[in-house]
Length: 472
Image (cartoon, rainbow, N blue to C red; front, side, top):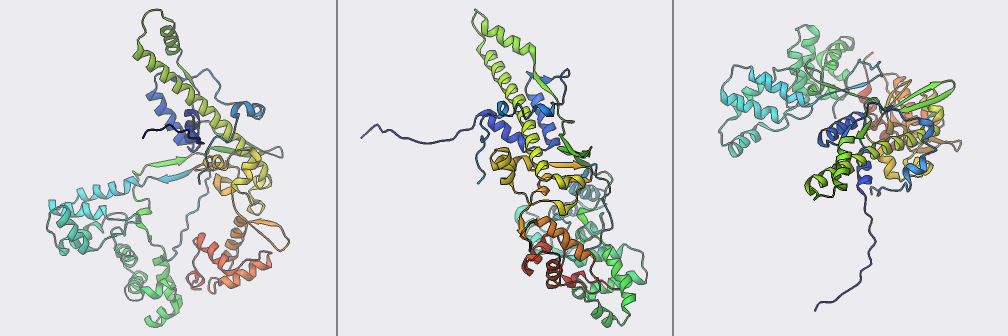
């Protein structure tokens, strides 16, 4: 039986402007530039406005704040490898290079194609390269690869053929590629080095005493080799120079690099912390006057309208206006949130002393700017800040806190920094245990449990005491 019923339902819907702004807020500077290029290519009614000044006067933004946003809560809520030495230091803070990972497999395939091998060996080589993990290790067993060829490609290969081709790949650059475990990776690299007493001893350590090496039980290794620890140290240093993750090395000069450009620029001048939203890579846009006039002409025409043209122009011009408006609101939102962060962390931004970094949560900034926490989360996502003391991720300025012995809230980042300083200054021949670190932190006013020290240490990729031990 058919019946009519009244149903009351509460539902939240986002307008196209809100959806557009939500997406743009998450984009960092370079991604935003690419997004603008795509919009210019896809929308003929949108063009660059070369006459307009790119920069928006910052001092007027707060006065126009209410008109720009109206209702601000427009968004819904978003409910064991040993440590190796690395002597490279980043002294240039102007940009952060990121090596393109896509060229790693391409480079290996190029090297494979240069080999004088059969077609079957080439197929095996391609399969092996495809099974290398992000560190450059062969992640599948040889027997599993035999089955893969038979069931997926209907090709019969044996383990000897795969191992033979694997040896060819292990001669590729970077050295150590195609290894099946860490010991094999290190041995491949040692075999490429010029043979001398230290290299020969290093090979013996990897072959016979690798487990002791991983645990840094150097005295046991020296005893088994019947040598002095001072002599053993040179061989250990040769091993520590090797790369445990060969795929992460810059093995090719042809790798493309992408510079992460800052979304905000901060400087200290005249005893004040100043900043601006970086708009160097953003173009000022406008709708094309020709298409706007054409749409108006069609709309006012007394003759029958070309509905297809009219609807097309109307849709594109509306889309262009929404995009331009969203860009402006994105800039204003970023400015307001960054200003709140700087006001909150003003003492830190003066000189970059991490001990001055106050505990700050998303909700703290949300309450200051009167925006939803999800909006703050979108703004800090994938954003970088250039300061007079380095380039940082925006989310690095946010941290939880603990209460010290004086009843003062201390940022967990400050505690981690103190922990790093303690470990850096320890006696490497007798590294500090977590219990000893707890005592030193307590002496500095940080009363935290041993398990918390272990958690912080692991988050900083600092190994346990026995793995930090070095030979004098």
